[in-house]
Length: 285
Image 1: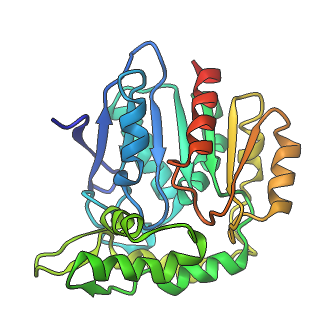
Image 2: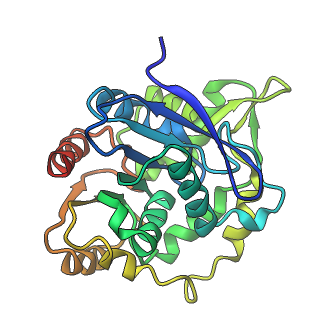
């Protein structure tokens, strides 16, 4: 029997969007899990399964991913639109205050939410992301997002993920790569395995300007005084040590945990990440 219920909500522009709702105690704020650019609700399967019962966990698929509808206008694939979508999810679910765990893009969304609705965030975890994105990491992501490749078997799919992500996870074995493929891909209508997202999400990414991007440092300031966890993969090419130090200076009470021999982004299933999230939630309850 599944631990979660599939639920849906509508975006302002009429898209049917999906989230997994894992049940938990109603005397605690729910945990909202926001995934990375090409990822979906499945990324948080193990975390949500471990927390549910004690914590209600909501894992949305952003527009254009997983079981959520694809957007008609690719320009709507941007962080501020995703934040608006999630705000409507919270409204539909009757959630006023929440804990948020954001990986990569999900962390950018978390910082934006901390600028717009800081009073509603009880606690936050930022997974391998900060207000400043390293250009080398962005170029690496631009190099593989939206290529539209398909694969005849899951083993072929796993090898393809290993090709693009191998440097970030040097300890992964083939079983880990198969699991990673099944989280990011799905069986297409023609019987081949395809990436589980709209290839058009690459279009706004190609135009992204790091020099003139939205200043997210106020989002870090919006988290001041709250329980905050900052996770970084030691091999990360997206979150630099210097950026991490600035984040720590602005959030001196935050906990910083570095996951050794992992790049962008930690899976949150590492023992150090599990323990750190447990400590964060203990401060939030």
